[in-house]
Amino acid sequence: MAERALRSVPADPDEVPGVSEAPQVAPPTAPAVTRETSRDKKVRQVDRRRIRFGLFALLPVVLLIGGYWYVTGGKVMSTDDAYVDAEKVGISTDVAGIVQDVDVSDNEYVKAGQLLYRLDPRQYQIALNNAKANLAQTALAIDAMKQDYKRMLSDVAAEQAQVGLDETNYNRDVMLLRSATVSQAIYDQTQSTLETDKSKLESLRQQAQVQLAKLDGNADIPVEQHPRYKVAQAKVDEAQRELDHSVVTAPFSGLVTNVPAIAPGKYLAASTTAFYLVDTDHAWIAANPKETELTYVRPGQPVTITIDSYPGVTWHGAVQSISPVAAQEFSLLPAQNTSGNWVKVVQRVPMRIRVDAGDKNKPPLRAGMSAIVNVDTGHARGFPHFW
Image 1 (cartoon, rainbow, N blue to C red):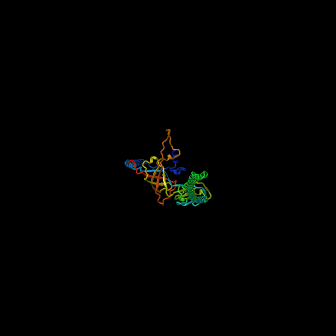
Image 2 (image 1 turned 90 degrees about the vertical axis):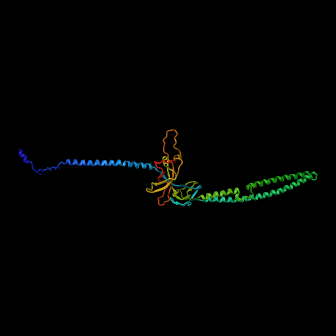
Image 3 (image 1 turned 90 degrees about the horizontal axis):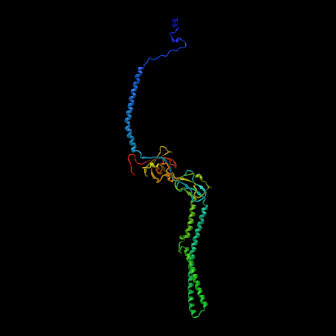
């Protein structure tokens, strides 16, 4: 039966239904793999030695370069707390009135002296005409005072002659009274007339002195030099000034902005800001570096400037001035605490930088733009300077 069973086993596995061929296994090659791995390890060890040697060889070079950079570096003081600034003025006038017309548009470039807007001038023209009429009337009054003074001098002279005649009559009556030629009544009348005319003469003299004082002590004073005339002339000048200030012109060249804030027909009180004028031709950089960064910064040192709005564009300039006080000194409530419970804060010191904006090919600088400034102090870390 065993023999029959052996015979029933098929010689070829393919003859058995549902049975797949067994996979063929490659002969073992372990010794070759071991030799390959050892060689790779040796190569990696050699590479590691070379890298380690190279790093140790580069270390002195890196130290030398780093030391040279540290010793020769530190000349540039850089801060990003900087902004473009320019002259800005609120356009206004010291007279009140109704806006008659506006001659500029928003964001328009204007030149110095160019007309911006005009107020209704009628009330100021009326005031000017009134002042001129008062000036002419004052001139006539001064001429009349001169004529009155001359008349008073004539009255004084006439009264002086009358007093002389009275004195002659009085002296004659005194002699005649002694010889009983005239009566006592005639003598008394002559004496009374003399005293009355003397009093009248003194009164005329005082009136003439008062009139001369009104002429500033000079009867021949020119009308234009009389104090009353000068007062009237000052009123004319003031009325003319107010009329002139009803026409508002640009104090300098620049761009006008916020012009739609006013329109014809709007009433503007005196000193009310109508709109703003920004000087775009003379911009500068207002920087606020830390106080610890200003050790070697001095006016006149060169500066390179970059604007956040224009990457890749560089401006050149120089330190124009450094504020004598920290920015917090101008605050409403300075950060000063004498109780002892305080935290020391590094202060910011305002610094003004002049910008060379002569190159018209560069984009315009607008007030308020953020900037980064680099000041070349010329001071290296390894070479101390004594200022």
